[in-house]
Image (cartoon, rainbow over all chains, first blue to last red; front, side, top):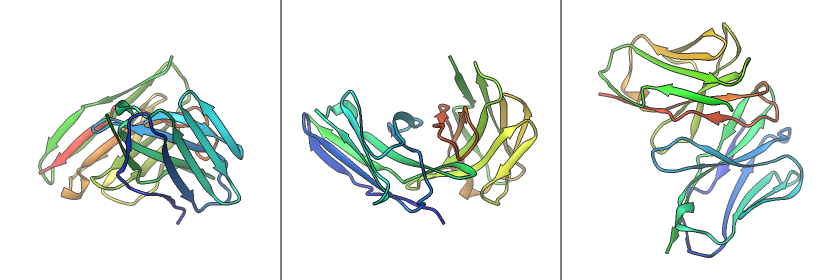
Length: 110
Length: 115
């Protein structure tokens, strides 16, 4: 059973701080990794994708990938109260659809 | 641009009643289509995916079924709902086949409560 693991949280950070969200996966063959943001009662929204080892930056978001350690992370700089949501890590698996972690709930206090 | 529509947004159904949820995609052809369920306190569970008309792959055996009668239409059905079928049902689409590098794009979801 291929798995994607995330700390459920909640992760609480003050406004303006850096939030660090982590994800590990079990399938060494996975090649594509995604971060989704899900506000309460809403559907997941794609915010980042990463395919190669290293860092990928998009605005206040940075995704980090280490395939040797089977580890993906998402950094949110200058966290805002509007970033408060559940963040889902998703990993591709050969021949089937994305596998999702259970998500980490982030709370940014003003 | 591509858009995905799901309806209804919310649904309350008694145990043993039938279910039909519909999803359509606009602005693209030959999309790969998916049904996921998110139960309270649980992650997203893949239920079905389809790479083309009439082609359905089931990930979890249960009392649900899926059909794809048209290229951009995906339907989730049940003949008799169980209490355990309650959850947030999400339809999604991707450009490339399952297992590829394509991300999924989700519809707004249907919140189903079985009473």
